[in-house]
Length: 263
Image (cartoon, rainbow, N blue to C red; front, side, top):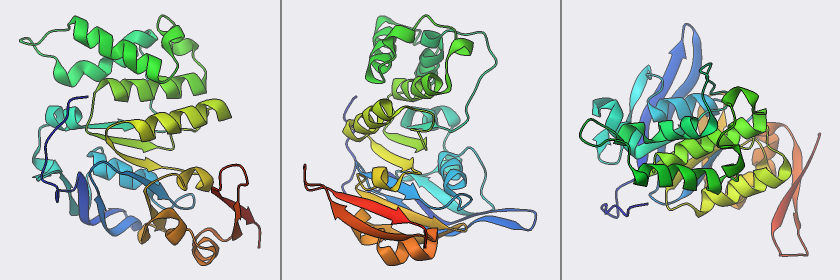
């Protein structure tokens, strides 16, 4: 990916007072959050806490009721969609298509923001798509029909399509859903090794411990942000997730492992 120079104090993405209300239901309530350039920020919280809603608002896929999202130094709402797509890629939980399309072409859609009449498809674009497929261990799927893929295979192809965009910022909504354990670990390693800023909603709290920082949502409100071990304390896990928890030390590598149980 091409290196981009930015002021050191400029956040990759931030929101202030961000909220969404649908009829009388508050889905997200006055969230202030800053994503630091180059970090992997995890979003955790119980089902229905607002993780997917927050990601959609930050990506510009939904319009907030209040507040603002800023992408770099620009207000997101003022940027053309093509410019947003060149800088930000999204992997949703349930993205799908009814088109009769093969896997290579599905991933090639990630190059769309970079193409125009003056900049048609090239060998470089072909190579980028091939690399994206290789990164998610899906090269062997390139000629397969999208409709023939399993849920886990589709998820890997969605991630490849996002990587093909060559974004500066990657937003992922529970990207390891439907994946077997080997590919879960592989995708998380891949995402964290990319030279991009990453915002990732996760269900598995032990996977979340590998993030640089965590943001905890509870009933649409942001209740804590910080390093994983400082945020996911036994007290927070009891209050937000309703579980009792303690940490164990893995004798293999000294890593902290979260052990949870019903109260």
